[in-house]
Length: 207
Image (tube, rainbow, N blue to C red; front, side):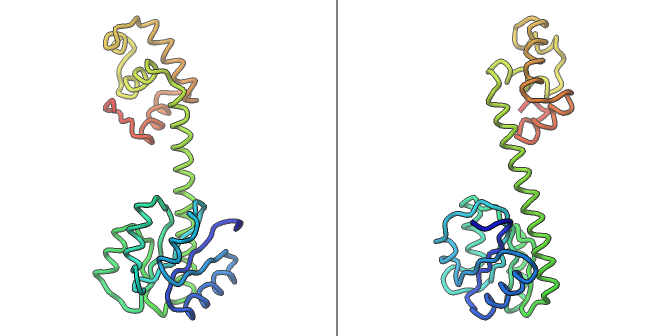
């Protein structure tokens, strides 16, 4: 298995693949090259940090086609598009699809390496965020149904007496549930609880 992030180079031009891979490796990056979108998709699913340097126009699936497929298949790899010609409509579509950059061949090596640096940083941040969400969800799974109800009402800004009224339980029982929620969610304040809840889609409106 590759150590560290992997930069995937997908281009139907062998000379471009070779040159870009050499540049990446000289800068200390691990690179894998593919001659088509289909060839990349035949590779085992990659779930590590990394990014794609993707040619727009290729035989078979285009770079934009692959961008759509990857989004549907759960790939979260930032994409740097490269193209043999400047096309505003295509570049706009690529960027709207989440591309980090759109470079026109021949591109400056320094510019490409900077785009790779930014893409790998974006990949690391996204993975850290996804890991945090998974951790929060695991904590939520430890809550009982009643504790979920209390959490939602606390996040919505309800006072203990209001929660007691809405759930038809005593205020003392609310305090017990609330303490357990704070303990299981590993937070010390309501502000921290709200922050965690928002990260998993439980809004302050009581979602």
